[in-house]
Image (cartoon, rainbow, N blue to C red; front, side, top):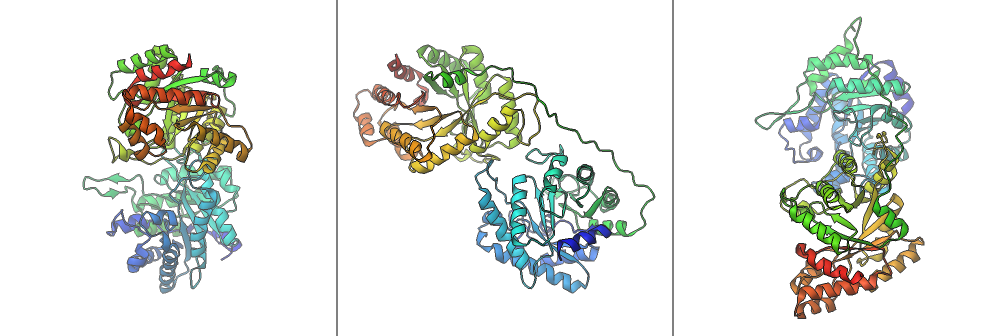
Length: 621
């Protein structure tokens, strides 16, 4: 079926899509830890039976069991090499079921999100994502004996991902119809913060044949969202496939969905009255819901259907001008003042006296900034931005807040940034953070929505311009100064140089390095960067770590990634009569060698020995 014929058909009457597949399979005994798509190979009769029930219930369109049949999602189950086999088998099962029904039913290829975050927010490049979508879509459209009739790109929340999927589909099958549907959270925004009106405008700019909403909450929310989409883009057909309400966890551990078939029947009429050309169900719906919707659509329509009133709230286009002065760090970077900062760790309880005493001592020793680490080594500690606020209030030194992306979703990240800014914490060091498996709670959630390079871009190009990541306005631009991580003695200097260049393009103002023990290697890296990139580096604040003893030196060299301590220095630490003072002496030598090359030092004290840091700083006077 070509696109023109598809649009002509759905313009004549509402078309009914099928209901859930994944939650249905789970209800039939398939474990949630299992790949639902692999059921195509292991229990094809079970998949065929679900298709048959939806066809008998009156569905005009059924979807293949391929929602997560891409190489990234299948890799979670070790099935990444079976993308083509699983998708081909899914199409074959659905085709045979349609043919045996002797009914006119269209077959849609289900394509869901890849399950990875795309650049610039994540590590997966757009080219890699497009290749993954191409692999799955090609399998769907070329499956013997004939591929799917249309594609449903569903449950999307990332505009980059939608664009990439549509691009892949159009390159492979320019004439195949495409339905693209987004999913929204309880606040009527996608997971990345987009509202329905914004998404409608963006989807309409893509080469798709219908757009809409699936999954999300129940029918009431989806009705509200498609009405907004319809107002914004009335010319593009609308699709609506809601969940059977918000899921509920029973005392027995089962997930239940509250919306009844009768409730869905009522909303089938409301959704189509609101302009939906395609309706169906998502998570928690069964053939009973689809059959009820079929009866409602085929029966006499009520004389009057009451629809809710929806209002598109325009985001403020103007924001208050920045009134906050530049940070002290910004002044230092501008006038090339040598930065002296020391890493401090928040307390592991609520007592802050040692933190503040140490901060006072370091200020007296010559530190003009203090770095506040966030859950270093994945250990439970006081919130870093609370500790930073206390230090700034009580000690009078600006702080650089370490801000890891690991363990935070985009909502929490942006909320924490606003909180930090409101507490006058304006200098940030963006890092990935330590994995939870090495810390106090190895079982804790370790995922993340955004990588450091992406967060740097969000902060410098959006927050500092008065907008959140979704593009919606915030009341006032922030004025964060943002630092990035750098290794000046990496195993692959050319790769590190390219990564630094990317961070600079995204807006990084300065770089904090890992501890440097080989000044000549650092000089070589600077020369390589200038020669290969052809641009000046941002100000570099060099990491210094005063070694504590020989065991400490060997541990860092052999067990900590990125730490390379020359044999000569390790032997000096082993042979020293006073290892701590030898460590201070080595740090002073490195500092003198690095000083012409960098704009500051970032001292990381071993075991909280701030007194040794003070000894290192004595060499600056």
